[in-house]
Image (cartoon, rainbow, N blue to C red; front, side, top):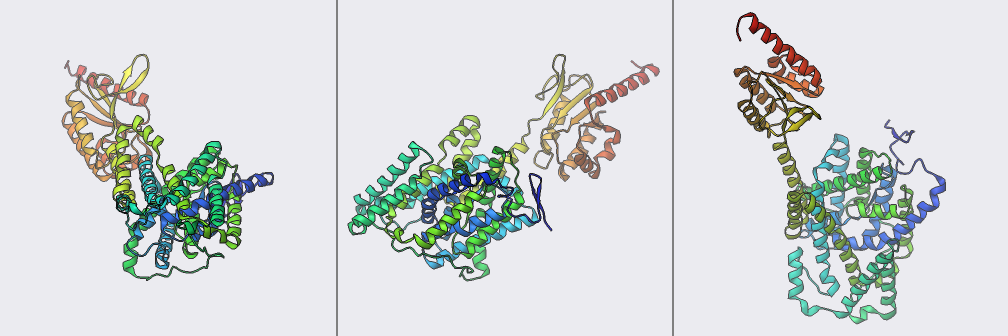
Length: 577
């Protein structure tokens, strides 16, 4: 039976790790945090349905069962799981040409994507693929979310102006606005501006003010009192109430459909992994707590199963929602369960007034969500601190805006891998030399390059693998050819090498032969046990000998001095100079 442990308390099953142990004295604070979060999240998740292209009620459904399942089965005490702009945008991008937005067929496909994401997440837990969360660098994640923000914000411009645009894609929607500008409605724009003003005004006064909720309640009241629909302002209309029905997505269960949706499901899977893991780590570090990534994978998988079987779309760990709860005082999943209870009441008894909600108000809320995702400060920091990575972030954002969200996440992954390979391909290797004042230190590979006459200590600063083995060969040749004294020993300082692949083993054998032809002995310093096992397996140890490995600099120097002294002694005895 699987067990989970937190703060010395062992649980027979990996459940309630985000809740237990619980301090009863903090219950009022947790409930208040949950209430505050509900006020902020309800209008926001309704806005996400516009991004995803699903009915408004499905936004509330993303909070109901999925959030409760993660609270029970997840590990993080802080991560909030629910509707998310990035995964909603990926869903809409993939389903745009497959069904009519908002239709039952479209919703079934969105639920199928949630089911596929859930299977991938649970499979990742079983076969240990959680490391894929690290394949999106912070740089490309900033660029990706910025691109999503631009796409989301620009996509709501037609709705705020009262213009009907059926085109998909950022550029196509803006072109549609220009082509159908005669549909522009001043009353619709006035509603949008009023909502924007209230939300931003409340945010300036205090981030604890539920600005979106105040704006939504106010505009619903005005719509009911002044009959906005009669003035040409489009409203949502009747919103169904009641609990979601549990059902399997009603789709054509064919292999061709799965193949068509699999790239999208994989993109969603990677975004969930990267965003959720990063958020959980950040808050666990902030509050000096532990969390189990494997339990979180199961919790996220079950949350998406809950979304799939309750007729809604993909859910994800949200950094913005997590910060909302944390800033309100929430320190466990009790706050999220409180939000679930409040949403349950809304779904059962309070959906009627939503019929009066103007579409422009919802567009304004979504517009602000998009603007919040545009991380200008993050881009500025990258530009200042790592100029090449800034252009990677900009390229990622551009692909999202001009090509698509799904293509953007794939592009982001490829760029991250290329960037990682580039760093490994050009490691900043050096030689170690002695300074009479500060001791040993590294310097670039140039003259003078010997630690002392006859000995070079060459530091390779990365794992040795096929992409950088030629660099090792070239630098060994450069150092030996440019040596300021005849070399006797060539030492590879291997403290930074944590892996050696087959190609690297072949290269090291060739390096040994090259050095041996010049009368130079190859030795190693500070080799990890796992790396030593790899060198043994590749036959390197058989060539250099077991006595060619040293665990400290003093041991290396003692052996070198002994060897040189012995050679000099032999030369003197034979009468040679």
